[in-house]
Length: 221
Image (cartoon, rainbow, N blue to C red; front, side, top):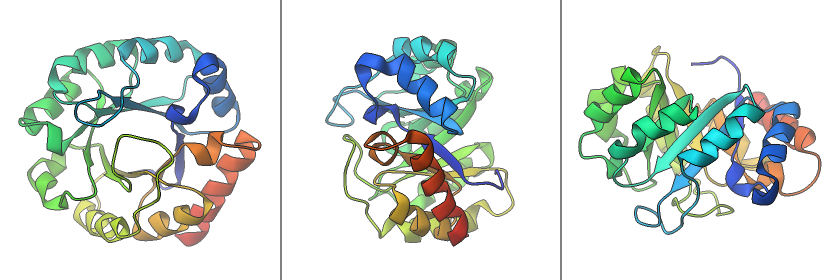
């Protein structure tokens, strides 16, 4: 786990007509990772990006491309997302009947692997794969759309996961409703990677927005 707070702007909130330019903009503005929310209209009620979009943005940044697969099934698409240029591939515990196998596949493709948990999912589901993870992603909204209200009760889950992780080198990421105010809550609970969409892309200077979220989170640690 990184000792610093990492900010991963979600391109779900970017201007799709200028996606390469937007990725270059957040890179130059000081983001740490670029977060890609992949939705299939089946596991979640929206459709967004495929591997071709990851491939298209890869030349625009050398930052980590953090791909969050909100799709069911995920297993048939792992190789395609790996080949497209993903650095981290995260699958949902709720959508993968063979979670251990998928994590092995991702690792075998030379990528870091993560597991995401929906708000109603107990953290116990990852107990037996904990030592195979690079990342745990806690959804602090119900997945499917950007701009939703933060579910504050998830901070208790974040704290429990932080305790489960112990001294393992696992990043603890939060996605959903993260802004300058909620960044304080999730960082205090133990998260070190913050996904922010509208709070970065919504208005104002991207660099100032990223710095403000980071500063609020760092102050809460």
